[in-house]
Image 1 (cartoon, helix red, strand yellow):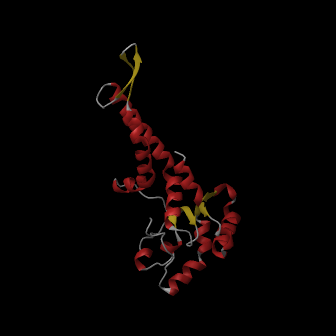
Image 2 (tube, one colour):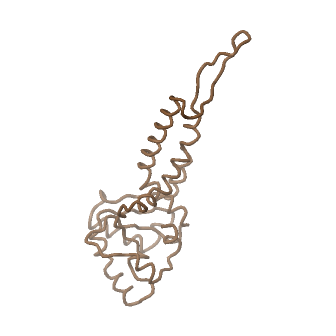
Image 3 (cartoon, helix red, strand yellow):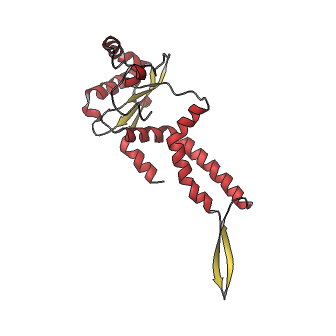
Length: 201
C-alpha cells in the first residue's frame, strides 16, 4: 500500500490491481500532496489498532504466565534489611520490554499477515487503481462514473489534512457522498493524529 499511495502517477499495472465488485466497502478520499508515510500511518492505525491491542494483550498474557512458572527470565528486586538482602518481589521484565515492539509490528504489518495467510482484502476504491491513469478514453469513462463508485460505496474514509477542503476533487467527493449516504457512513481521519496516538503509547 505504501508504494501505491506514494504519488498520483499510475500505469496499466496499477490499474490491473483493481477487480470488478458489486459493492465497495470503503471509498478512500485523500490528497496526493500528503506524504505517503503520514497516510500509511493513518490507515494503519485506523484498520489495525484493535487487532494490535488484542494480539499484544495475548502475547503479554502468555509471557506473564511463562514468567510466573519460571520459563522466562525474571528480575529480582531486593530491599536491604540489617545487613542482608530480602527478595521483596520478582518482576518479569520481558512483558515491559516486548509490549510496544509487538504493538508497533501489529500496527504496521497486520494486513500483510492476513494477506499471507490468505485472508481476503477489504474492497476499497482508490482513484489511482480504479481509474486508468494512462488510457485517456478509459480514464474519462472512470471519471464520468465517479458518482456510481460513490453510490456503490458503503463507507467513506477521508484522510483529512490542511489542504483537504482546498482541493476541488476531494470537496466534490465529500459533497457527493454526503448527498448519497449521509454523514453516518463517513469517517474523517486526521492524518497528523496517527503519529500522536503512537507516541502516546
